Length: 161
Image (cartoon, rainbow, N blue to C red; front, side):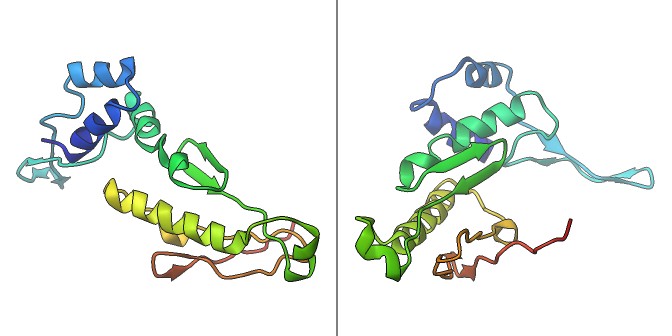
């Protein structure tokens, strides 16, 4: 049975929807196979054990069901749009900490990144860490390093207009 199907079945309890029921009824994720054709010669068909068909109408909806509980696992605000996620936090410089009653935003944000990585591992998902970027805003931002797993998140390249 498809691994994605098994994991979505677990999510169904927290987010029952007609789309998931439709996908299940139509065997959208079950018993799929794929093969490669090179110069007219086809390989043996092998079972597809995870993922949803790319370009399908239900694919994006199933992905949203799958990732919908990610924000419940972190303290900082999370923004989800299609297959992009953003987590953000207010970081107060040491100089300004006495003026605010703010928790250490650096530790909160790194803790959230750790929990996001743990969530991904639990659900057999993988973030492309090379595409994950850290953006520091404000002149007094301490510009700390943050990691996802063992990899330091880089700042996006600055481009001229």
